[in-house]
Image 1 (cartoon, rainbow, N blue to C red):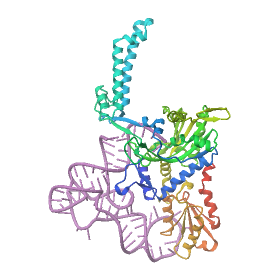
Image 2 (image 1 turned 45 degrees about the vertical axis):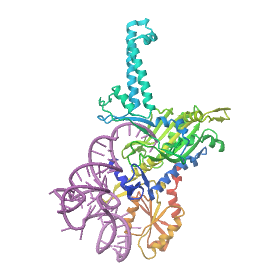
Image 3 (image 1 turned 90 degrees about the vertical axis):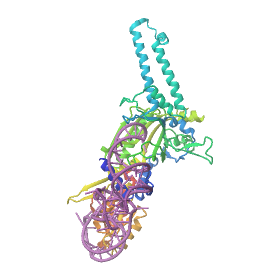
Image 4 (image 1 turned 135 degrees about the horizontal axis):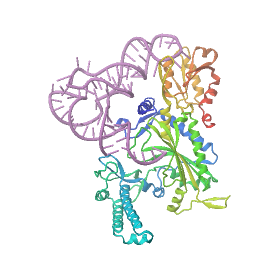
Length: 510
RNA sequence: GCGGGAGUAGCUCAGCUGGCUAGAGCGUCAGCCUUCCAAGCUGAGGGUCGCGGGUUCGAAUCCCGUCUCCCGCUCCA
């Protein structure tokens, strides 16, 4: 796959009613997209598949739907207020972007390295008589550097906590910090990027009524975990699942629906006894990759990417990466989050978030193993791998969207072979039965071959054709999108045949 | 944000040394044909050439500004 493939996916998605640029008549809104008539069906089917596999198939997992707005302290506890608030600066020559505070800290680290060097020299000179503490307290070079560090730290704190980011730039210039790549000191101004969207709540903008749109759905689960545990009489280990929108004010939101500012997550937080997190982490790794593989998008298109550098909240983390048109990229994250989140919420809320374990006869804060998949990314993964250009035996080609049948927006299209002789009426009759089971579509325009190809491109897995024999013997042909093969079957068996191929059961039993 | 590329019909694009009513293919719609894998015939609809300004008798075309999209750099689901 290539970037050309991404372009094909984008235009195909638009042409067949899957995804439209948002507010297109106003030239669109950057990195915002709307799901069209087919897109919403596919998206809902992905959600359904996930929800059934997580909630319905696990008796110890239940779902919730938390509000997008949350108490502002939530985001202090989660670390998002600090971690998502970065002062950034660009080097104009190398075009590299850095976090301004990191640049300054690296500068401090360099000075510290100088002190260490001085100490090493001292050891060499005085040998066994070397008194490190005395040396650090008296050596003039060390003293000078120590003072430097202190000064920088004070200034940095002042500059970063104040409203005036130009002071941060002044400090960088004052220290003569150069870009590690270009070596130049040609910097842009420092700009603050807060990845959380904020708005005001209440009728007055005055006062501190600032609230955030949630940057992840997980916190809605954490703050509710005791409510669910108690009202549902849940015993550990148990899980809470949620599907919902989250918002991040990405500096760069690109690559179609891969990175959007408004996106949808499907998350499940699994609460376990401390010490068992590793085994559950492994369990969910396997369970989740099986969920993906059951779709048949190609096992080679997936790979695990284990995190070496872990986030502040995790003791193990892996990504399930998918081979998107732009290469292998993260599709789902599986994180062992320890008790970081619940402990933080205990601290900030002053409420105990402990679970009483009747087996152990003691209370503890559970550990959490999280699975978190980007719904829009899953959508893109399916679209990108499903869209294929096939060369047929006769040398002609066809465009086919091989969406896994249970996820396809329209499951079956019904065609009368011709527009007369009562064939349309017979076709309508069939639809009027089938529509209780699956999404159907009726089509009588153009040659039959053309109608087949149109449904191939739209992703409809089955086409039923009513011909003159149908009127005699109540049989029709059913054509398979992927193999293009046709079978003649009794109308009375249609529902059963189709359901066996498009029901979620087929995927979930895997 | 910085650098590169691009905005003309639903889609893919041509036209861009300024000059007839802005075109093609595919798609869409209506009718004919009645045929099991996109290809027949007839007709129709669809564009203020991204937007604003300027130069000019005249701008899709030249100039300025602006917006949007795509690719790369950082972060993440």
